[in-house]
Image (cartoon, rainbow, N blue to C red; front, side):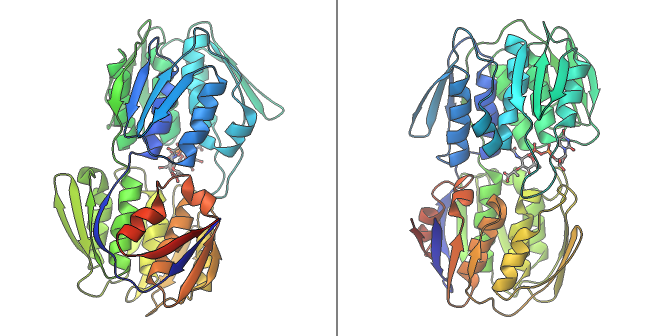
Length: 415
Ligand code: EPZ
């Protein structure tokens, strides 16, 4: 599947942000631990959510998804074998490990491999489960973990990993005693998970700080919960406004989750006006180059690094992007070169010399966020572009082309 994009339109208007992919996937996995039905609201229609729906259905859950509301009813007895094909297709499937281990005492899952953005092991997750008393075997590319009842433990993460923090919070929720996760990730999605778990009857505190404390309880009930807005989608729409020289209001957003991007865009010369649940973004003067170092939250999100690269490609002067989270997140820059971007890549650093105008070209999305950045470039470029590999963009952006068309972009999907 591909997008055909005619560049050169200034975007204008209002766009509503959907629910956060990187939160809802985890809440769906957490729902497996409940004894009653969980209702999750503001669920985006994206293919990663379809995949997680498949994963939890294979484990026995009944899922009803209507509009943006999803109801998850766990079965009497959950399965322990995570479906291999789906897990291979989406790394976030490993987030069922903590819930299964805590609820049924066993999980068998294929090791997720590296992916197009680099090496992504799960050693922190497994180290944490072991510290909680689980027996973890890694053989022939699979992981089997077992525990009669997990025991609370103090776990130090070598890096504030989002997924490990979430998996261990889930595991701790039904463990015996208290689990302390030190050097925990501080992302807003972790806070969302804490709020969801606590509605289910868990006792979690500290999310959003470097130390999360989970006092285990015996059982968890259902919850009715609304997912936070997707800050990465919001950020993409903000950059779309600026890169096309337009003026866009991004609605139903949580500005506090985007402090790093708001500051960076202002530094580059963009106009950004913030009110309680909306952000206005516009370009009324030349955009200048910058330096961006991706970091764990509240630092600059690695998932928005490709968006800033797109903006830097037509900014005045040079920009330096330093990627500190992933080993190989610059594939999309090779594609941007086809559109005339001037890029030098040296290991985890990219130097981008802004050009006056990109030119339309035929490019291929190498991954979700890189694909979105190529769409941004195509909208700003002279002439027509084809962006291939739209399936990857569909993993994380709900109705991307409909939302962009609503702002005036000339973008169509070619099946
Ligand atoms: C989450 O991935 C997001 N995915 C990613 O978004 C995001 O880029 C990432 O957090 C960082 O913000 C979901 O939430 C589904 P990590 P996650 O564990 O949890 C290393 C997107 O496009 N590490 O914080 O997998 C790891 O290799 C996706 O929406 C280990 O070494 O990220 C990486 O270098 C892409 N061992 C770093 O830590 C481990 O056991 C951060 O990974 C775990 C992680």
